[in-house]
Image (cartoon, rainbow, N blue to C red; front, side, top):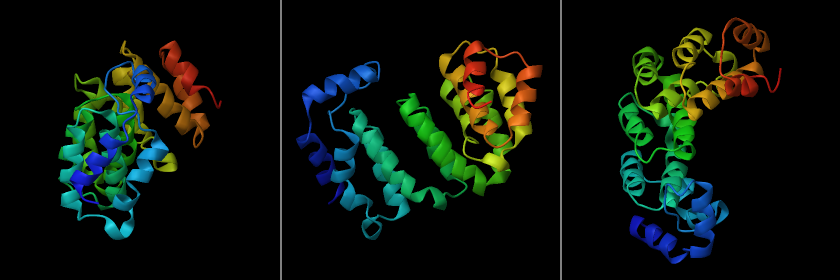
Length: 219
């Protein structure tokens, strides 16, 4: 199934009635075709089969095409495809990862990009962590800020707590819901690995009620 066939297959499966509910769930920020996750995976099964995966440059280009489509399902297909290459990320790939973070941004795409792609990228390219994530953390873009908090979400014992502390303190006064939520989320996840650190951090720093509530769920 080529790129055009995939796009047409999605359009042919559109369900206007389902789309209404999906759009409502996403605050009516994006149009939907009305295709569920299982249906999406079924349509893309052939594309995502290991034996059929395109070369990485072609996959990235196709993902960018999908990202520019109006309907939200196409961004989800792009994420399904890019997930297949997260172990192969090269130093310059952070450029297009960042472009996707700031394009058609909402939690459903940004959280995947931050934790799956950026997270894997920085595991491989540790020399880029300080430069790039610090820029994200100091950015005026809340989705880059959120990514600076969440890229370590799955790092467990490999979490750099110095960076984590610095980035949280830089953003703890933010009024943005998605920043306060991310602070609580990353602390909650880290509490599974290092609860003593999280408890001490919460005791000595004043965070929003939302952040504290989220951070304390497993403590």
